[in-house]
Length: 430
Image (cartoon, rainbow, N blue to C red; front, side, top):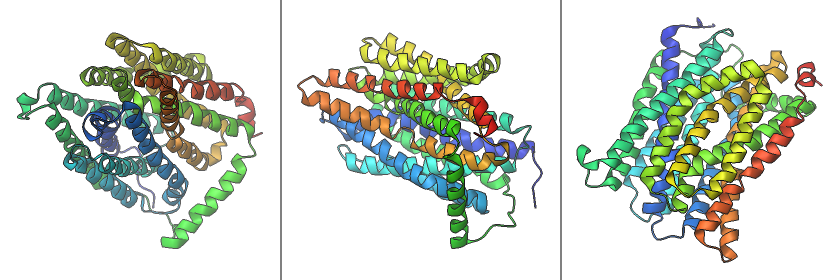
């Protein structure tokens, strides 16, 4: 039996999970883990090598989630166990993130292993979190509810990150011996934050019963069957194939910059505190800018607005290779904040315009799969380019600058493919 939609209490409880797990994206993925990995767990190691290790870790986690995303998504459609799967992945993320607090100096293999599993928990949980939205919001309200979740994520993640930054800048205020102890505690704080603020979803969000749901193996088989049928349809529609390829490439560039920016800043000699301030700037600029960029898309069209965002990221990836001062890094942080949320929101709405309206759930399964594959190639490319340039006799500083510049390839190729997407033909299904 279907549950009533647009209940305010249910929507608030659902949105709180974004508030909860976004702390991992900000404090761990983008913020403290890259810094601590270089300065504590990989102490004494060449920065090019530590960058390659971090890039490989991000890529491994991305590949695992991406390969499992289609079948997990299909299970979410066919079964009635979304909350159970979400609980499993969230619990994995909470435990693995909290365990980073216990990793000793120099033990980079353990840090990498916990980080990979925590990232799988974060990304895997989001598959089922996203799937729950269709059971709590009506079609005319789903855009607002989705945006509300993103807003809660920006705000919640930013608040805890700001507190954690305060802890590292003034450790004595919180009773810590030094900044390193404060950073280690921040890993534990993210785990607790994630666990506590996930509770409203598990208590108050109900899952609609699926009369056609099948348990166990049969449910998995049904998921594979759905995946095969949708794939056969998608590959015959050129506009959709082109867009998905373009989206994968330019979003790989976007996500790589998000995950590797701090690592890059350390590699070229910036202070970790300066980089953390830059991340805070991006976080809080991104909150209102996502709404503003959506307004721009409504005025000039989603495709031109996405092109603007791609062009901005292309300039950022090239300019970043030449920056010398922290003020330049802050300017880059502001610019990224202006387009980061917008390119994600408009890409999703543009895709919705070129797919069959009566099969949106199936087609978005492929969209989400490629979203999980994002930040797989980029970190590896950065690591390979850095190691290659280093092997040619150049300094670590130059190798790091070459590695960030290489990300521009994703925006060039992705933007080129996106140019050839014919929105009208996509609507007509040809």
